[in-house]
Length: 321
Ligand code: DP6
Image 1: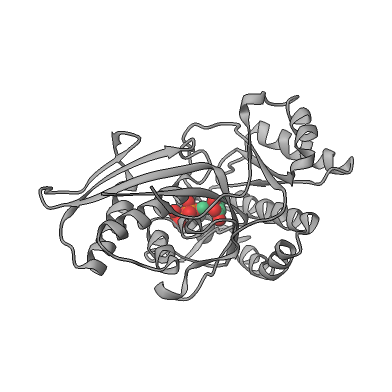
Image 2: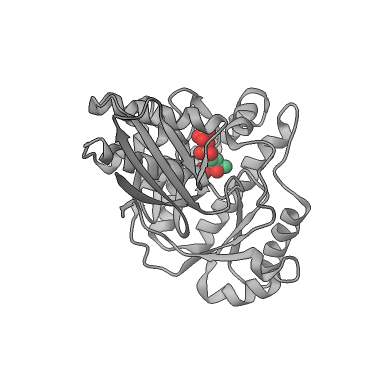
């Protein structure tokens, strides 16, 4: 039995929409930061005494659409290794599940790492990224630590993530504001698909997202928080704009989401470098320098309680326990 740990990542340049649903090939490149505070530990054992795959998440049997995704990854690993045994998978999330905190990212990255090693394969991180992508697109990025780029690619082997900067040596922080950790109504998978199929804003999204890749990479390498933050906030707002254009329209924003977005803009007007990003859920993540944490948390405390705030720093890539 092999156990692997993967950390979640938050996209600064969002992945939003698939050009190939089966292979999970995105329309545009995306860029993320892997975080230190939220992670998943997954153990895999290919056991010849099993007559089906047994999958447990946080000690409960997995149900719903996740089952098929896990089996897809296991089937791929069986195909690559020549193993025919079924597997026992036990996964523990150290993250509020499905709250827009990208738990599927850490979950499928840990699964890719643990299952390949348990099957006797010794793959490169690039290959692990490709396998993780088959479970969930954002998982391709959680194989690596620090700042990561997922190349959209054009087929299975050309769509993978790679580090921009694994060991981040600046004091960038991400303050997570937990507005609602209940299961969201529209999953990221369904939300992005509906946008691709019905939102007239989608082509503009793709064009602008791809154009932001280079400037965002440059901002990361130059440790330019202002440019990185502005581009990240724009990416998030444009992604959410596509949902308003979908038919039927929908939004992940809740009243407190808007209150936090506006508080961040006000702090910026006061000269504090802080920027917002929001994934497929109501929670806001604030990008800032650690020296401004105290001020920002104090301001946010007027809207949410202290226990709704979690300060994250850059986190590591895959590890085996
Ligand atoms: C808004 O990776 O969860 O967080 O590939 O369908 O599993 P699937 O989607 P998923 O989508 C993440 C969307 C996002 C942006 C991002 O992480 O880049």
